[in-house]
Amino acid sequence: MSHIAEARTERVTIPTLQRWKEERRRVAMTTAYDAVTARIADPIVDIVLVGDSVGNVCLGFDNTLPVSMAMMNHHLEAVARTRPHALLVADMPFLSFHLSADETLRNAGGFLQRGADAVKLEGGAKRAEMVRALVDCEIPVMGHLGLTPQSINVMGGFKVQGRNADDALRLLDDAHRLQEAGCFALVLEGIPAELAARATESLTIPTIGIGAGPSCSGQVLVFHDVLGLTVGHRPKFVRAYADGFQLLQEALSRWAADVRSGVFPGPRESYRLPEGLGETIASWAPT
Image (cartoon, rainbow, N blue to C red; front, side, top):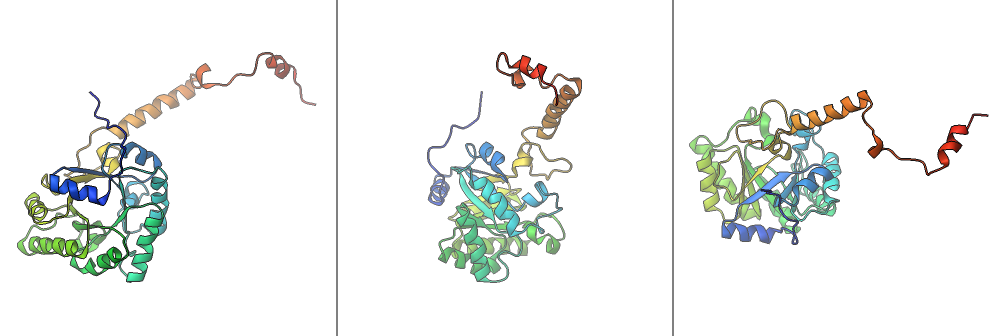
């Protein structure tokens, strides 16, 4: 039985997400970095994130820190051209919202001008001022707490957060500070399930978990992780629903073998001259 969703007739909006939070309807969110992944994901998920994870997923970086606004704009424009019905969120990369309110507004506003519906930024209460500035300019903001990849040097790597009392209580406080500043949703990454559950029940805005247990308002995973397109170590919270890397390699191997054996291209993949023109071509000789 197919689980592929029918094409949406209505766009997912921020009020939609708020209504779903009240109705306890779970939200599915994944990443897209180009038009192909956006077209695959859009009929199925509720939120499409053009994540700065493009750095390590697609661009070969070890982490997200080298990702620039120019890179993000390039990938956002590709996704936005597909005109997704899912809510389209773009990640604010490292140093794009840290230096001044003016630069933050310019960068985030540029995302909306390129087709994003909202932006996402990492950090707790210390980012509340920037969140307020964005919301005051009608730029919707999704927050991101817990394991924030742009902070890996401070955290000492990709480690679960909120495992002691002080850190757990600080996260809960940060979540409410961001809600008060105007965030419409929060990503909770790499934290104990019980802490994510407490945050979710105490907030009026939806939470989107990644490595945060089953009690969040929704879940997000990287597109390539869901489809098994990444190789090597996978985080504990990833569940791959296909072995996409092997499937694609097998298909490419069959094609390469057909090329080398002369089986591809065959008559179905070849164009033919109009009838009668073959003799003309055959009789041609260079002068």
